[in-house]
Image (tube, rainbow, N blue to C red; front, side):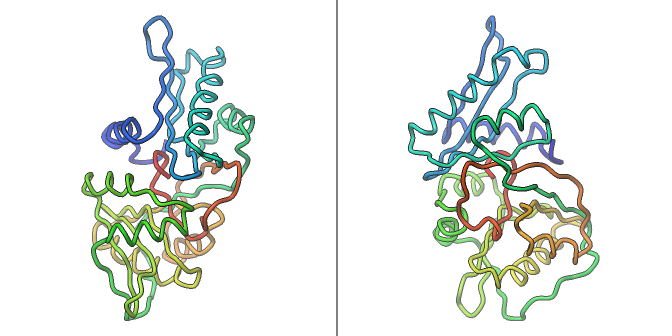
Length: 256
């Protein structure tokens, strides 16, 4: 389980998934024994949570539950399926059966910034304009997601956009040194954008942290150059490619 992924973080996410996504339970003799939740944003179905109590695994509960949530997503127009998976072999095997194939690792980096990254002097950080974030999401994430930005803002998660010469190059959220989600429009903007985001996060906490997909070599280079440590790894699985995920940092397992 990712660091910080505790009850205080999970309950609001459950509520948001219930309000804006698909949220199904499996019951046996009046007891909740499993759940599956997903969000559909444009053509993308993201499996946000999928749990079956340990004592009820391998009893034909998880498969039908996942199948039901997948079909509900298709009914809402989703054509691409993806998830952030643990390294549990049983879970990965089930996702493979549902056509979600390996998209690469997910790495979490954390620690103090030992080597401050340099960036252009003209970079400016300002409060996030959600309309700007939605336009960036459309390109980088493959679809806008206004409801998720509304959730993060209602949760008092500080959002910022980075500009240079009047041009917005990306946005990031950061609280208590944790960066994400974050996205930037051009590949060449990645290094200065991440340098500015790391610099900002460092003002919030001694240790900073962010998550990146393995395809995002720009973020991996930024993390290792800054002296951050690799603290965990998990899997990204998808049925098809979408967006420009090499220019994106996920928010976490619940909303990606």
